[in-house]
Length: 115
Image (cartoon, rainbow, N blue to C red; front, side, top):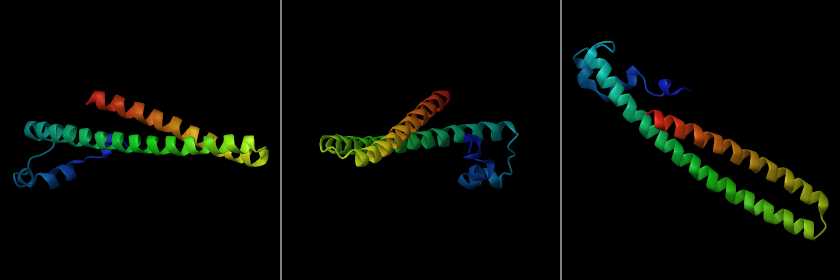
């Protein structure tokens, strides 16, 4: 979902009923200024929350990856290679997850710079 769909004129009017009572249109000068200011405020808060969530997920994924890595090392020492191979597949999934989260982090940082 694009950022423009995260905050609409309808949501803006719900937050600012005084403008709804005045029947201000979105295309008027006053409506444009008020909506853009509220939009920027809303998007900044949304992106900050998103960055926080991604950070939490990265910590969680890294912790799970470290546990799996230790498990793989133990299985290799014990010569349990079929089990080690299964754990390595899970480890690869965690690596892919971390890579996706890194991409998301970069995207959020880029969007935060734009606002």
